[in-house]
Length: 222
Image (cartoon, rainbow, N blue to C red; front, side, top):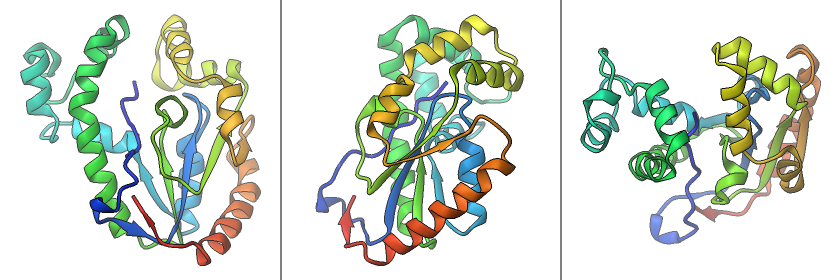
């Protein structure tokens, strides 16, 4: 379940400016976005993961928990005080209005945290991991990096990783952008049909490119 979204405003009134290269990293569920992002982080890039932020907001004590409980009831909060992700997933998959209610709570908090992490970033460039980058259409980015893989492999990976039934994984994939839609907006593509080790040369090549491009990047307001 992904409720993450990238901040959409380009107005200088936000008072957040950066001269770093801004790279949006996206891909379908199970494509390997996290592994690729970790590879860039190991090379020194600043990585800001919108999904990880969304998850932290809904853990015990998370900033979104009070509003979620007020909007959806205590039944959507588990015994540990976190959002019950399985129940919420079932709810928003069957009711688009409920999905919008959740996003209205989560998205402003994500935007605020993304802005804070952007301001604090020290790497030569910034990688934003945004699963729904293509679907939302809201971003201010220098480049878009798509992690691509065969859809049957996506399905297999998610079933093995999350233990979800095939029908649910297929439904999640159906709600996401297609491979063709993601590839149509890509500046760069990493093909992830094998092991992580096979990706390292391409991650290193792109790290060098992004670092060089960032040196001549003009200041941009987010």
